[in-house]
Every structure is written in C-alpha cells, then in structure tokens.
Image (cartoon, rainbow, N blue to C red; front, side, top):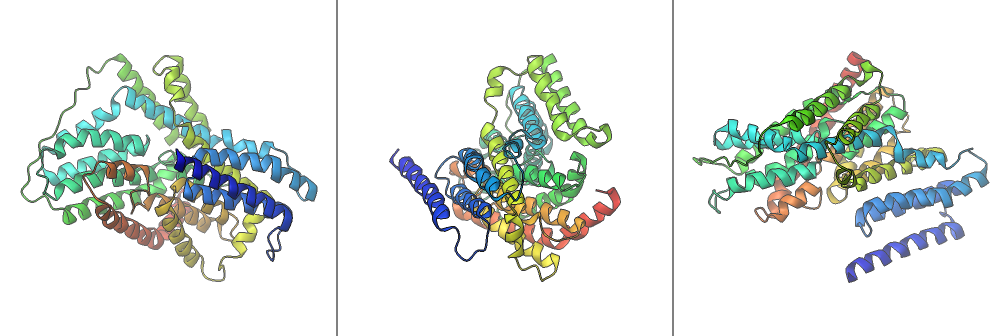
Length: 462
C-alpha cells in the first residue's frame, strides 16, 4: 500500500509540475505555439506514466482525454488556429477500431466459456503423439493461432495450465522443460501480429492508416503479416530445439475433460466462423471491420450464449488503453506538434534508414514498456512523414510488428510475466531466447519488409 501511495504521489507531482511549468514558462527555445507546448506536456506525462506504470495504464488514457478537454481545447480556441470541439477527442473512445477489438474480446470470452480454445489445443497435442519436436511445434501453432483471435495473456494462462502436467513428467534437470515453457509466451506474443485484433499495436496502426486513406481490410492485414509470422514461428521452433535439446525424451500428452460437444458449442463455433469470415470479406461486403465486430456482440448476448457478467468481465482496460493512444494522436495532429517532432528526425537520409532507426526505437521501447503504449507514442509521430504512400504503409506496419516482437524481459509482455511466474524458467533463459527473437525479427522486418509490403500494395491496390 505504501509503494502504491508513493507511486500515486509521484504521478501527481509530475502532472502538477508539467501543468505549472508549461503555463508559466512554456518550453524555452522550442519555438512552439502554446497548444503545441500543452500537447508536448501531455505527451511527456503520458510517456512517463506508461513507462513507469505509477498508475494503471487505462487511467492514463482518461487523463489524456481530460487534459485535452480542459487544458488543450481552450488553448486551441484561444489561438484561433483550428476550429475544433471536444467531439474530436471523444471520438477515439468509441471508434471503428474499438468496436473491432470489442468484437474480438467477445469472441475470446465465447471460446473460453465453451472450451473451444481447449479443444483446439488438445487436438494439436494429440496429433503430435509424444514426439518432443512435434509436440513443441504443436504447442507453438496452437498458441499462435489462438492468440490471433483471443487475448495472448488468456492463451498463455490456458496453455500453461494444459502443458504443466506434461512438464511435471520430465526430470527437473532436463533442458527440454524450459523449451516447453518458453515456447508458450513467445508464440502467444508472435501470434498477435497475424490479425488486426490480435494485439493493440495492430489496432493502433490500422486506425491511423485508415484515417490516412489506406484501404486495409482484415484480409489485407493478414496478407501483410502472415508470411513474417510463419518465418518467426519456424525460427522460434528451431531455436528452442537447439538451445534446449530433447535428446531421446518421450512425452506423455495430458488429457483434460471438456464434456460433450452440444448445441451451444456448435452455436459458439458458428458465431466464431461467421465473424471470422465477415472480417475476411468485409471490404467485399462493404462493411467496416468494427461493424462486423457488432455481430458477435449482438448475437452472443441476444441469444444467451454469454451473460451480462461476461460483458462486465471484458478487458475494458485494454480498450481504453488503445483509445487513449488514439486520442493523443488526435492532439498531435490538430496542433501540428507531430509535424514539428517529425521534422526534428534525420529525414535527409533514405526512407529505409528512417525505417531502420524507428523500428529499433520501437523494439527498445517495447522491451521495457507496454507495446500498446509504445505504438501509441511512435506511430502517431511518423504519420506526418513526407514519404510515398507505399513506404508509409511499410513503415507503420514495421513499427506495429516490432512493438510485438520485443520480448527479451519478463516485464516486456504479460505472457512473459505469466510464464516467468511459473518458476520453471529464469530471467537469463528469457533474455537470451527473447533477445534472439527480437534481433532476428528486427533484421527480417527491416530487410524484407519494405520490398514485400510494397509488392503487396502494387498487387492488391491497397
């Protein structure tokens, strides 16, 4: 309690200091307008609170909204530069992207309630027949596929529960134990890059790209990211097999009773399939992805597949974390601060050099702080870059992927923290393996990403 109070006090002091300092002195030597100074202060406060987690991350989003309305908006009106009202700051909190994510969370709740996620994981494990390398691959595929559709944190917790009976049958000194534990959080982290709803950085990237006029459907995003996901998963599999060899080990696959597959299970599966198909073909149907996300929300609660309690238990904090990042991006855009910050970057070099630099920054930041917070800080700053449209898409996609690729520390992602708390691995194991994934991912995204993504643009007309 003492530590929590001290963190809250530190956050309060930071906020009061930022407001007083900006109002009294501005930012000396920065040559910014007063609205830009206020936006810079909001950005700084949000960045410090996101990194330090002195207060809950969703609270930071509401702080951003509150400061924009009561501090920034009057300054904008006073300057007379832009004619805006509070609606522009409220809009991100119930936008198309938020509806898309809400639909994804409802599907996650549906799959977990009716055991569809467990049945899928068991199906994968049964087919490996106890062969260590195939079992490892099966777990990786199950984790990555589930994390494309449901929370990677929930997937990690569920898969660790399933796999631990298997791990307990392996001698304590056998290295393959660590491979089975490490593959779960890493595959869950990676799986999120495959769909727009897989992880918040994807939603943030998609939101800004859509606002900039890019026509990126659910299917388009998967075309952009799935080849990299496949490569990353193959590398993860081979890396763990070599770092933690199985030798002549023979595994016994655990079973978990899931009950009879009844009518409600078929209904839940039908909702999942129809929603997934709707996201795949949303552009052909003339529907926004958020509109498709309304389908599982309405059907599940209309027909009683989910109850009001399930709705209350949705991860609302994640939704508001995403919203806060989007609202901050709005402020950066309308005040012109984003353009000012971008002009401070070394733009004289080639766009590829810029991608390499910003992707490295995103990877480093995401290693020590929330990938959602990193995406919310970095992506809005690059959207005003004077780049060709195809390279802008490559840059933003690369940043979204790198936000999810950083996983070298137990604190880097919630799945990492869950796996580390099992005490079956130590921080050195995670740092070596997660660091290798981050480095290889960075090299591949920087080297192959621009060429592949620009090819996809030319073929698909995004």
